Image (tube, rainbow, N blue to C red; front, side, top):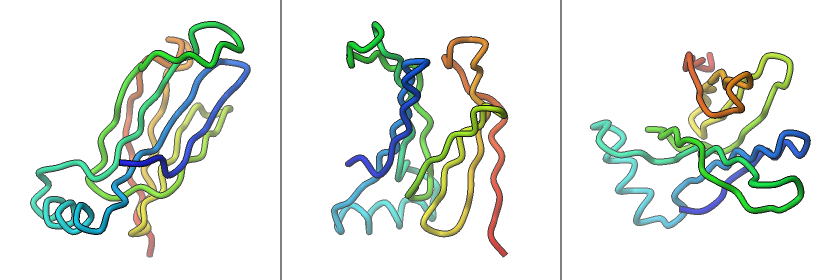
Length: 113
């Protein structure tokens, strides 16, 4: 898997990274697996910086996706991380900022018309 997108919040030392498979053979296998919903195709991983400006990170959590993700965006006011998929889906997860970004809740999926 390789990095497709990331969101870094320097004031909080939080990094969200979107990983997706890029090799064609793996994409075909992932596509077939996604039909059966047996394997993740992409992942979002949240990291917390060890010390301000250190650029050394600790993994907080991982959220696996059954469809290929292509972009991330962060809404600070709503504390929502939106994940765009290549098939037009948008997945939104609420990140618990009051718990230092250590958890996410309420996954919501929106389909394009």
